[in-house]
Image (cartoon, rainbow, N blue to C red; front, side, top):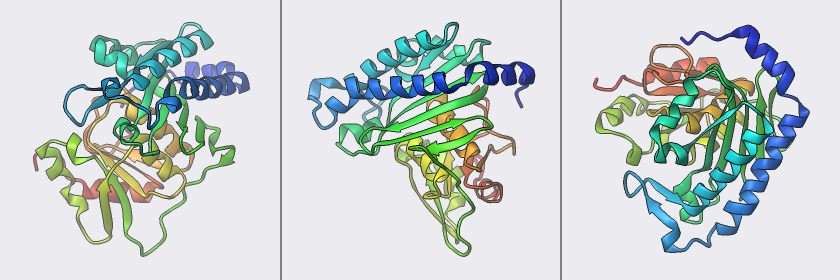
Length: 288
């Protein structure tokens, strides 16, 4: 497990994660979406959509411009902080290393669920997390087309549109609803690793927007996830949201997921500790 500077993290939480910062970030996220994302929803031209690594890996002008907006405003809101954004890392992979540094880091996914966004599906969101020394301290999950804003602060709980989120355990005797890595983003070895979920009492399905799947866990609409990739912008916000709603997460090594990487994959997050252990036990390591 990563070692954390407990005292500095607690001091940072006390001194910096206050009402002004929380509302400031929420305002920035909403403004970025209003300026760069929502006006392009169901209005994209063909030349505003590009492939990155493969036909299923898309980026749009909305992703790029929203990230530019968020990067500028978030860095200004907290002097001395740095930003790691999905699109900036695509352009300069070395910039991802800032997650390993000592400075407070904003982890940004401007449009999580770009495929849904491109196809006119409202199931996309903007994800922002603030971390220090590898520990996520606050997160914002905003689904503009659904008018949903979830905010979590370490040790202070999670809220959706101002209402407290509590995941609670799954209903006894029901199949576990588990969102898994989408086949388009999963290698053959990883597909085999997830076959353990095809068992009685589990109802696996491909995931949509990772951020909204985490929100689904936090509100009790999804029981668990089992994911085979660890890019921080997909998971940082949601991992904290689930924790603060009473859930838990584990890697194949039986330890919590780390945004700094090096996780034994697939990993899982769930509504409660019992469920996360149950799902982790079902998931076989890659190559088995």
